[in-house]
Length: 383
Ligand SMILES: Cc1ncc(COP(=O)(O)O)c(C=O)c1O
Image (cartoon, rainbow, N blue to C red; front, side):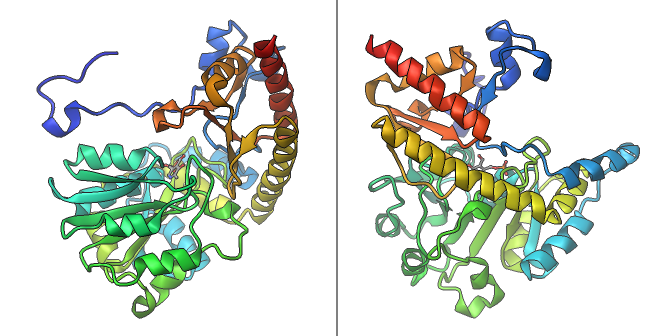
């Protein structure tokens, strides 16, 4: 591993680069398989980055084809069409919205807008790795609060706040556990917070959640007076997951107009490219695709839960499109062998969850292939 240049800012010299899920083509090259997709006899399946197994929204693809003739133009810097559409969809004012190059960018913008070096940021551990990485890059002091039974411990997170805390990140549902905080838990947490604290509610997997007690955080924004958090909340959502547009990078944030203005002030002017804007607008109208996606995830989750339970493998109940499963000391070896068979899953040591793997729910065919391969890998290890 190469080290970071010693002239880099002190805050980033100790950072570890984020390791994304291995791309399919890389695995094919390693396994010396054809990279031409369908024509290859041994297919590689990727269940490692919580992408949409159905592919992109078909309506988005149609819209994209038409949009390519305008590629010589800069994109609309204010994402006008998309923002209007989102405003209607969410029943908020456009002044409460900001679009980003993936919801990842909204996380970075929140940090850039609200955190000075030396300020504190509270995050759970483990959780989505970008919060800690980007907060460190801003020179923030990151206070980490362990999960409790693989769920956010909001009481402990509240106890970790100090007069220097500016931001708290809550992934709801959480990645990599797939668990969620309930409306009751969240409201108890938000009540009586110091006014300098903003809460980022990261809802990248919002569209998959069907639990009745999941908090509908947009309600807090409709009427600032009813928001239990005195500092306010920033809600971030994504087109990468349920809408199938991870490759285009679009997400959005919803917050009070004043908070949005602060984040808008530090974004690059053309942060969301023109194809991404067109595709996201079309995908938002694609209710059929969204319903198919939800059904696929629901059925896949049931199938995988049943099959893994039959194998005696513990899994964490998930409300998302992925499952965290516990395999014990062999987990890393199992991930390696699955990869050698063309099945990419996520090994969890970067999250300090040794013994666990994270598996994205795929098509039924992919789910069956995963279970079949897992069985033979486990059997091989036992022999
Ligand atoms: C919890 C969480 N938040 C945010 C993101 C970033 O998503 P996007 O593709 O919108 O940047 C992810 C992606 O995996 C995620 O798991």
